[in-house]
Image (cartoon, rainbow, N blue to C red; front, side, top):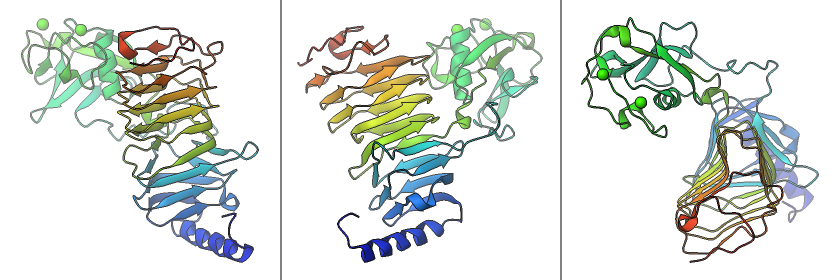
Length: 361
Ligand SMILES: [Ca+2]
Ligand SMILES: [Ca+2]
């Protein structure tokens, strides 16, 4: 906007207010189909439903703007997101502040997360007999060979971040749908785990399994910024992202991250099958849970420079997998401040020190 005269700038500003005001007075959400600017005047914006930037639209965010997302809400970028803060006026994407610290405050426990699975007869919403809905009927899962890895898969399927324990709950009714479940722990669904077949069992209902899941549910986070179906270049500079489920996520395309912090999220930066180069520079990826930076299946150059990945509590700080034909340059990563473990799996090498070696084919 710097290139326009003050008069034009004022008009653009007023137009932008009109566009913003069209949604509701204090909150933002819905499809953005025309180029829109979020001005500092309107900040902080409360985003109460998913914002989708349409394919041919650009959402520009002025320096210093704060966007506060309600739990479960997504910023999906199909067009372009121009978020360029400055070192003094960073742009902030975070969860709407709550005055209580309980994890479950935003959780609507009456609304099932997964229509095909539930926990029954527990003393709260995250513990109980594991039941699955198949062939029009609710049924149970046998405790035979059921272990914590199976519980992890079930809890994640229910939207929780993980499992705490499993136990014999019993007293179910209907079919025993699964017996001898054998998960690796990374499956998306119990049905994808090894088992002898649906309804193949030699169990009685006294052996129905129960599970207790982690207190954190993905519904308490806002969902993050998703570039997976992005069609236009975007910019993220001097931006802070926190308390998102998947903070910055892309498939094929992710914008370069410059002076970006990603903090207290479940997944920090997640890229899958990149078809354009990616540079992450002068950034800080800290205190995230299941992944700091996770790069899968890139065929283009990835550069991570002067970037700290620190204190990823339950997963890998930097994980890079799949073979890349182009150079992968982690040279300027400051290895003195990166917290290991780093999974570095290009070319079959794991646990390689990122020691300023340029990895090429
Ligand atoms: Ca098992
Ligand atoms: Ca059995």
